[in-house]
Length: 285
Length: 279
Image (cartoon, rainbow over all chains, first blue to last red; front, side, top):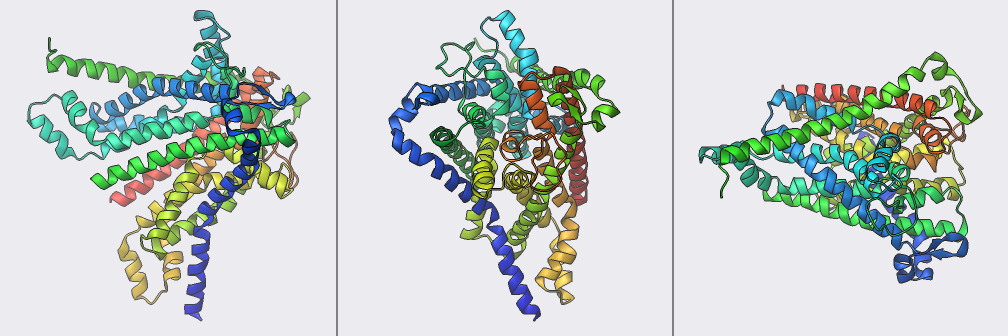
């Protein structure tokens, strides 16, 4: 009786353990099922490289959105990655443990600020500033990059500090005993040892920037075109989905799911790289 | 010419210190700016009143109720699944090919952007299962979104329970499940609650996954099949459609305070758990 109950529980738990994997597969299947037939029908080339997005004329080319997403993400990394990594190094190596114990949670606490709030700050503060000092419409690649760059800071700092903190102290002691300054020991030894974790933090942050939706809708301006400069208004892949989903039906809706397929593929690839970077780092140690 | 290491050291400290300070200043600015603009709007009537004229005036009561209910539904679904998964991974099986696949699935799920969850929830729960925009559709979608967080945190908490506890329980003749239920889970509870709270924090701030699954009705929901609007969605609609900047700031202030409180409580609990483990 008792043994029978135990077996039932074991099987029940095993079934439950598949919930995350099953959800993942369900999501993939449903997004692909809606999107892939559309891509096949429109033609892979026409969909990815077509530069006209005019749903009322049955023209669905997402090339401008792909380029825009790329620019905004690269811009966010250029702003966020150096700041975040510098912050992570500084907090780990140049600051007393007590300060780190206050600052790191503060930064992680602020990771909870909703993306819509960042977007709103972008609209109210950043966009007018850009319009006044650099010209253009204000809502632009630059504004989106800055806002996303700030939004990914907690991700980069949090994962990078963990990676740097995991480097054994003996490494640092060896470098310092050879007469290296703290900075020399950091950039010659510690960073190299923590490399895989830092790379993973950057790639995960990239995925987050690429997938961010609401903040980008608010600050990027949403014009469908290939940006000529950082001050041009653009629409990203995510913004395209979220803006038109409400009114779309039929073929138009499928086109939006097809946009989702492209987004999902890119982000899964990035995450796959990040996960294997972390695993690779663990194995080496 | 080679710069002496003494100077590169000073330069590096200055540059990185400035970067750290800058980061902190930006994040603090965001909070101070929103609270400064929003708090003057917030009063008892704002918190307890019904919105009038699409939210142009009146209060935000339905949004507060929605913000409270939606994560509750999500947790009610995700917590049993997440904790069950972590119990299986930590207590019932060794590391093998199956656990590797399960873990990989969890990691992948964690990386999916919220707009994809929104698309999926819309096509699966709202359209295919004909549930419509409602509390349950939104709750189910959010449950899937926060599942990885709960699994990871719970597993860590369960693994942190000392093995001696289990051995004592087994030596008293308890079965594996009795040990898990009466010894392991109570001891891992603070860690499990931490994971759940992280999920709540994320649900409260979420917009993209919610707006396409729970809808945006400005009413008090009467059942699981009624549409709700959370504060994040309410704020987004007010700000995006230029309905009322004043009420948008007010909503944002309430939203940010709620999230900071949730995260602060979570952090306190996590700290407590770590302190206990290191003892």
